[in-house]
Image 1 (cartoon, rainbow, N blue to C red):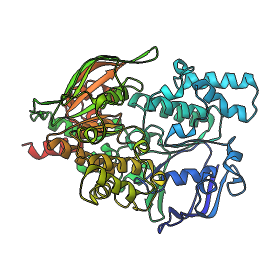
Image 2 (image 1 turned 180 degrees about the vertical axis):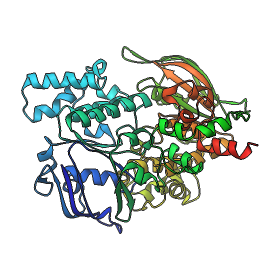
Image 3 (image 1 turned 90 degrees about the vertical axis):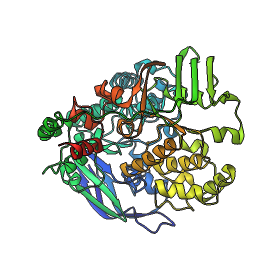
Image 4 (image 1 turned 60 degrees about the vertical axis):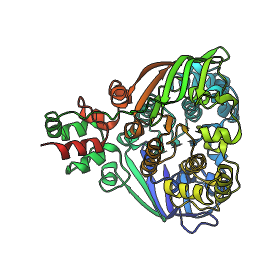
Length: 536
């Protein structure tokens, strides 16, 4: 179905090839995962499949890429629309209309399909992706995860033979992500749909993949089965790192397999005292939220929310897509004005803060990092942040290189990958040393190494007697970094407690290690290694 023949790709002003002399074939009905570090070229490889690279992005391409016998050299991406459905990292960039139902129908209208065919397909996709209750909603009012499902639906409704997805679950809660991936898996097996997917959250997708394309950088690519690739790959889900820590002979791709392989370990750990979660001793509150209500038109986003965030805390706000997480964060930093109730940020109303006073008290990174980036290059963005935040020249760029090494200072922010853009925005905000750091989905586009760097930075912020609030669906990040979890459903707080208590009470939101070790309260590989080291 898809054939790469001696393909090499390099971008102008770049010293390294994205891929070099790459040849492989993807058969009809195959589920292929593309993995690799942040910014290594996964999105570029996906865009080669429908001709977006190099027709729209530029670059020097050697070799040939063909889909169902059609060479991408000979047709523009529009000429492959009937064959290849594409879902990008940022769904908003691909939307054309304002209403969900109209967006689903738009692609079919361009192909001049009959109205009755369009109506039938729209209804099928609305049911398939649980979008029926959103059909008349404005896309601008949807959460990031809901927008992502609409984007996937817009591709599926065209009935393509090949579906290419770039980070499709990055903004989805664990339950929605599992549903979407299960649907794709079923379409692969029932309809022989060919799926090529790039994803950083391997713990979600690896069990569905037939093969893995592992891009290492410098033009190097490894291709093999998931078991073959993960046996030596440094990029791997938690259960693979757990198998390595336990010196097991094989790697497990599913929680079920890992539970079977680690049964002796569970017996051993059950005989030693259980770990005690760390407690933040600070009693000084940075944020006080009292009886807050917020609505968008007739839809309530927040209902009587009350909470306090203390110094030294790293608080994760979790919940389903559309639960109200982003609305809560935007209200806390003053981007949204609440209808009723009161929010206090170190004794001040955040909605009245301006300029440097705002950046010193609260640093906010929205779901779309580009919203706070306006420089013409990475170096210009970092230099401006140094001046605005009154810090030593080069401090912002040094933060960026620590988080995601190797980014060229001359690159325009729009030419960065999603993960690199997020790292740049984070560096700009962090250089102001705000008392409160607020992040909305901070791991979109970040690989495991970059997430570990982010974890170190967030813990450093909390250790300086500041506070961090992050809204995220990344349960593995929460298990590593959060001291407290607030769970929101339909605009209301339904759980507020220690990370161990809240995550273990919800099987869907529990991290992989917790599922393997259940019922023992271990969340990360480090927890288990420490317990084994301290066991008699």
